[in-house]
Amino acid sequence: MCKSQFHSFLKALPKVEQHLHIEGTLEPELLFSLAEKNGIKLPEDPVYESAEKLRERYGRFTCLDDFLHYYYLGMSVLITENDFETLAYQYFQRAASEKVRHAEIFFDPQAHIARGVSYDTVVAGLTAAKRRAQKELGITVELIVCILRHLPVPESHALVDTLLDRGHFNDGTLTGFGMVSSEKAFPPELFTEVYARVAKTGTHLTTHAGEEAPPSFITASLEHLKVSRIDHGLAAAQDPELLKRLAANRTLLTFCPWSNVALCNLPKLADAPVRKFLDAGVLFSVNSDDPAYFGAYVQEVYCRVQDTFSLSVKDWAWIVRGAVEESWCSDERKQEILKELEQVLEEYKDLKA
Image 1 (cartoon, rainbow, N blue to C red):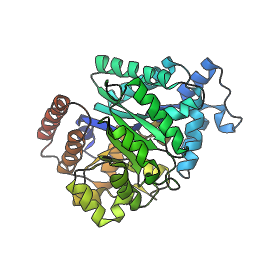
Image 2 (cartoon, rainbow, N blue to C red):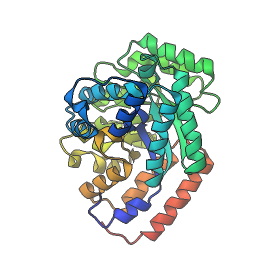
Image 3 (cartoon, rainbow, N blue to C red):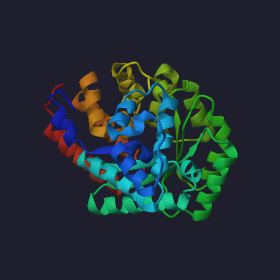
Image 4 (cartoon, helix red, strand yellow):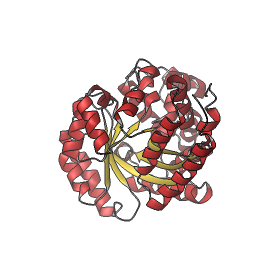
């Protein structure tokens, strides 16, 4: 937690979280509880002997694929609609306690369908948690459905068939469409037609890009997938012209600086291009990604960024204001959060880094 005087300021800031995999909020304790409830036999791997050992292993990921191995194993305990509701609502409780006012969460139906858990089961549980959170916690929530880029492209088309059949892009169930999973071997161009089909519905489009792959993957995502947002975008810092393009078009990067360190895409947090993004006028939000696996929810990530970069109140105002303005919630909700933000900024206007 923050070592600096900025602690109370960062706690007070109204936050939006825009890069959060709901399956990545599965804490080891809940994993073991659901495994027992659902009769799921966990691997013989010694790290599954206790929640403590599993959490310790999570602290030693070597790369994205190392993490994904445990991520997909973990989600095997999610079986029923209630399991997904429990998972999501626990996250919403934690997020609300950290002053997250609006959350846009990813989920991966294909990973569940492959286990025999239907899309309808998953989305029903998440929607139930969303409604409870909005009613009981005062947090607004939008769902972003994601395809897995490591699977054959026809499987993504099949999922889109289901989504279109359910009408979920048009009835408010889904607000966004994204793409996740191993990046380097699966360039954005492979999914041009998939994205074009979804684009016809008017749904917001995003994709993970530039996490492990070069800046060209970000450019290709903008040009071929026609996304309005980039998830991660770490590699953008390597391309000055791309930074200019992102800034000029107000393309939001849903940046996850701590997860980039946890997965060894950055040697240390000080190497994150926070200053470069700020200096270039690139809009970015600060997010937790998969907090149960990386050991830091969004408040902690804010604090680690502050302790590393000694940002000013003005810097945080830019970050949070841009994130709110580029959120996929209603204009009315944006104004509510922005009003709260201005009140906090006024209260802490004399705070120095």
